Length: 75
Image (cartoon, rainbow, N blue to C red):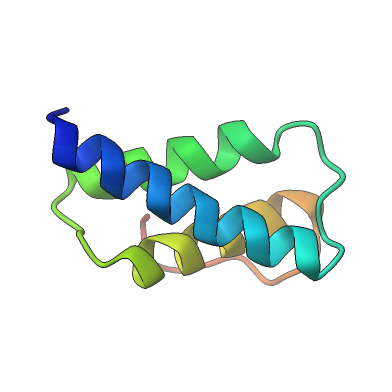
């Protein structure tokens, strides 16, 4: 990944992390791994919108905790 994509990854993870932290949803030690893996995979598939990336990663994380219904789309 080139530098600007690393920045996109970092900013998207930060958005998701702040949301999860403020909403009290953090607690799973796998949060960083899930967020980074989800966002990195979507960036590799061409997605570039930070909010889209963050929202999908949040949904994947919550799904992993059993708090939401599974997403039908691939991330």
